[in-house]
View (cartoon, rainbow, N blue to C red):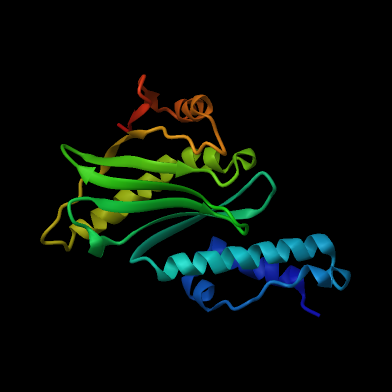
Length: 212
């Protein structure tokens, strides 16, 4: 019989320490619910959650030239992964950036954004979808967005040190449009959520936030 507790702690420890080598090589499989008579049901559910989480994270690591991972605990005391990723080799005029919260469940909360620059770096928020509004992941993402952008800026600055063709300016302005995912949140509630985290919203639901 598998020692679920030790495996759960092993996975969590390697997620927190950002051990990419472990994440990529981990081959643990979920245990069918029919075996709940062998294991403690709650512990089995927790184990399967972390196995699913690490499998999803593995795909993102393999599919990105630059990925950053941060861990937080949600309101259910489950470890979740905040992820930002982009492919510097695919930059044309703009740079596509994917920001999301990966959980050991079916639906992620994600924000698709585009970096471009004028007098400074600008991040245009194109799509923001919460996997489940009631779980608070949308709020978690917005609450950590400045922290995530600070780290993206740090990565872009590093590229400037050896790039001969492109000089990235730090992201100082956030723009976009509040477009609700109708099955999850209303326009009014989405606007309230953005406003709570410092965004200004005009009558056409366009967003603006200065980071200076």
